[in-house]
Image (cartoon, rainbow, N blue to C red):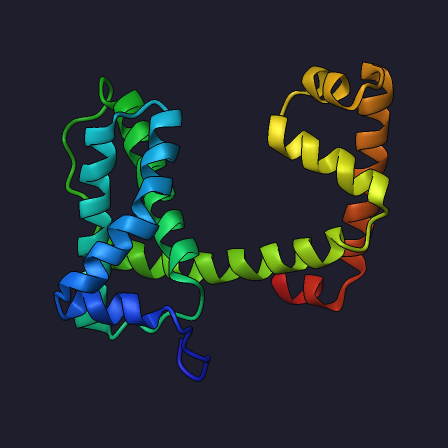
Amino acid sequence: MQNKNVHSDQRYVDGLAQNDTAIINAIYKNFVPKVVGYIRKNSGSEAQAQDLVQEVLMVIYDQAHQQDLKLTCPFDAYFFLLCKRKWFNQLKKKRLQKVTINEEIVSEHKEADQFAFETTVFEEKQSLFNDMFKKLGKACQDLLKVVFELDDMQKTAEKLDISYAYARKKKSLCIGQLTELIQASPKYEQLK
């Protein structure tokens, strides 16, 4: 992460490293509710979400101290992705619990490094997606926004007052256009 511009949200990492109460309170106020909501929607409880948040904050704290973490993306994206991946790993371990014996946890520092890298790539891909999405026609944008929001083609068709068959066909055409725009972008080759 050398030579990259440090994001203005570095203040959250620095605040955690310094045990700054105001920064920690700001993190809990601004970013934790999104994580708690996500975990609750994905087979978790509020208590599990709070525990996970604590673990992730400790990983960031350790990384800031031991590896001089410099954030190159918004803290929200970095924090949420760390929490999301950690939650998926916990769910995966629960499913395998009957088969595996208690194993030592892989170093969280290496895991956090990987997450930070993946977050940066995720942000760049999201930026490319958003830029190309804006190049689509209004009809495609409107349809895809509803598709992404509802994630159910029948409900999408009903909300847009169109037939299910037309909604599926139009979605396929719009996704195809979006894919072509993304793949034609010079940024796409850099992100592969």
